[in-house]
Length: 264
Image (cartoon, rainbow, N blue to C red; front, side, top):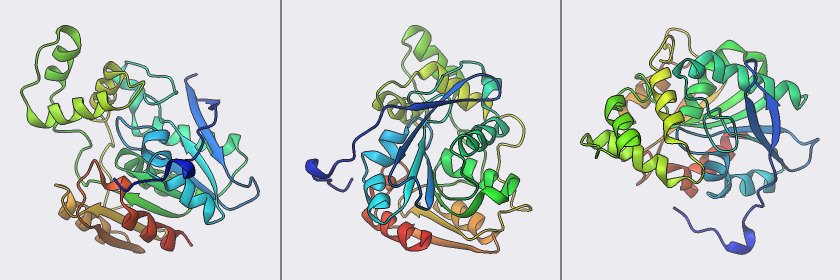
């Protein structure tokens, strides 16, 4: 991860909460001039607004470029409510949360910045509510079922009784979840299970029509799948993030610079 000078770190404000359709509290944050062009930043699985966008320098770079930044802790993450029920984590629920955030902030149209799960939700927001998304940067987006390789039963056994996780992919997800302060592994397991229902996959037959920049790390296992998915988008571009894998790509300076150029 690129170093960020301590004196230049972005302050993390107290969250402002909006209510989801089901009554869950969704934590949001805002930086910059309220009258500036807004960028909506949405993090990945087992991350948070702080982890994905603040501590990696994105908020600082966006506000320095003159944008207003609106950040969200998606349901199940950060300071937002963390239901355990897998049915709380449908793609429609994630999209509905973001529309509620935009309505509460009285913002009609945004530039969208999402990574991993946040990119997958951004794809669907751009398709289902195109009036809200002018253009989007989607980092680390797969073309397969999100979190589909996580072994739910092993993760639950680890949480319930401390049974060691044998599956390497599931081990990686557990380590990722435990890395971020305030994560609740039971909620994240519920999310991973819930994302296997319904329309969790991006549909290449119904892609976003807006300009979209796809960016995936050169060392990410989903690189070629991301590239193929990007090719289905009429106004899509694809870039590799050099020397990065899925979990450290958000800290890449090259990724930030490419994204800022595109958002302009």
